[in-house]
Image 1: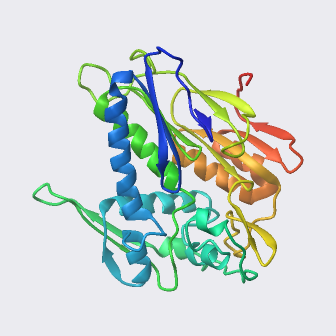
Image 2 (image 1 turned 120 degrees about the vertical axis):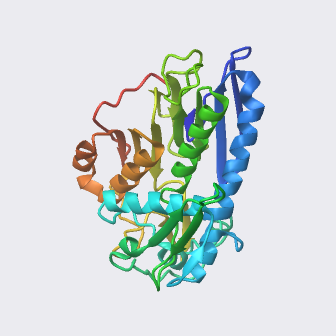
Length: 338
């Protein structure tokens, strides 16, 4: 698995691998047991389509777009959106609002108002920064109540007035965790999933029918080799092994575009609405889940010089690359030779 990238099973190995595109990025999945690959891919495709229909900022028919359009009012939505929004709010809480899900209008003002493939094709007028409304993330309201009949839960969301949600900071990591856990539990096998470099490990379940993942359940359980690159088409710069949890890489090098002849990137300072000044061009983090890793890596880029201390307090392992290419390691970060 390369982040961005994938594990490539050797010919004749017991592993199966597939890759395709979804959520505006590449998807890669490797499962233990090549005979399970078709079922794993089918499940992943279905889940990612559900995530897209619920959480996309760029689909007119998505639940998120409907909720943003009705800001200030309760809107019935797919339970998946409520879970994704709660995940994003928790990320904001853990980072004291730094990783902010209420940057929809800020990103649109910066030119990121359509899919990134469309954004990068052309320039536009100079951006007028739109800061996030202070503390708006804490005013997002959600409801998720189980149906007495066991049917689909009653789910709704109320976006604060004047706010548009964007789940880009945590959305891919949320989906990666979702796919990895679903594949491992449904097919009872180990797997590793990457969505645009947000990597999650699904641990296999024991054959006795219990729901407790185990790390010694045969081929593919642990560890998974992950190659790290700063951009999807770049050569790998590091190789690590993931036994569990997730790994995420945040960078200012990939999602860049022009506005008024000036370069812009997608990691915005919520207090200014501007692309953050670069101290670390790329941060990779290993954590207990892909969401936790992505939250920490995104916050680290935004924090600049204070990032290493923040990552140490979070108790995660990280690899930080500054503008000149110099690398700093935090925590128990271990690499193999590429």
